[in-house]
Length: 398
Image (cartoon, rainbow, N blue to C red; front, side, top):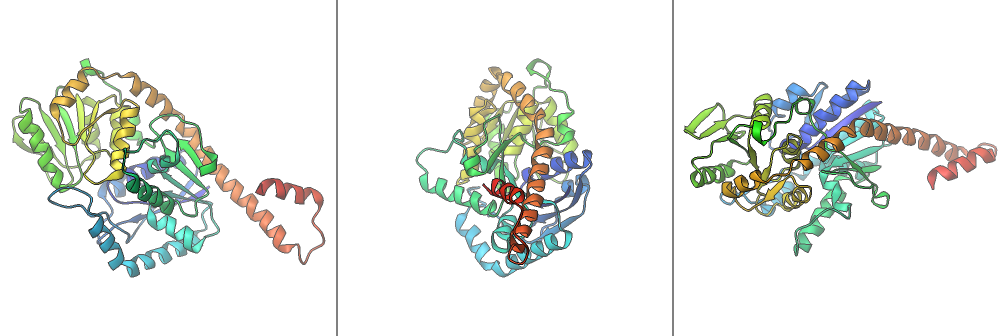
């Protein structure tokens, strides 16, 4: 297969999933044409993705989530205002993406929950199948938990998922645990996509782990929450990873700031006692795979992360809180049940065959459908179609 990626560049999760999918497909002999990555405000494609993604990368301008620097909350007004003020730029990105698909003619496009991908397929309808990949797609599964009472947020969240998956042949919901597919919603439940650099690592249990806590955030304003956690329990050592940190810096005897470095970050997670982070799906999955209890603090007004935290609690990955409460995390880690991690690892091993088989099926069905569509368009100028072909076509489209 020849596969083209469209990737959301916000945060680390979707980029990491694209790296994992590329590793899997290339290992099985398939060709990755390249990745078209949404980068907002002229930002560069993150260096870790450029280093680990072994195919051409093209940056395209796309929407950006804006956060309030004082409250760390998702600022919907500024986000919408930014989108409206850049509509012309985003339209050029859609045209660029459509032209790339027409030029390269992939067998299938994999959209890692990028709005530009959904809009391109919804508006221009390229004659290529597309699958939309993301934990967000699980919003259409009956087991997916939503915060109580926030019906308007739930409505907007599901509308956003529909927009990102607009024009898709299938929605692939990355799930913490194995669940049945929901064909009525075009939803196929899939294991998480985790980097090979993570999955080759040994899991250390509580007795073999070090005493420090790993902290990880991406938003600048969340540094204050980590500092508050350290003030709460200065006796607990914290190793904090943050993209605004340029070099390792010892802030106190028990507080260390670190820049984002893939291998060093995974080393720290592998040996830590527990993890403090926001409720990003990928970070929680990595901790769950390594058997590390997590305290998930959804960012204020970030409905998707609130859902992620509830889902993480459902499978025993950790606990959710409105602050980085170290006392609660330490108490939880003392009673953490590692059987949830064991189930998660078994579920993850099923992904290798599932992803390749499902993607090949989508590509094959598209090629077969194109064949029968050509037959139908030619019926007006050809002799009547043989009944066998006609019946086969009718069975296919049903």
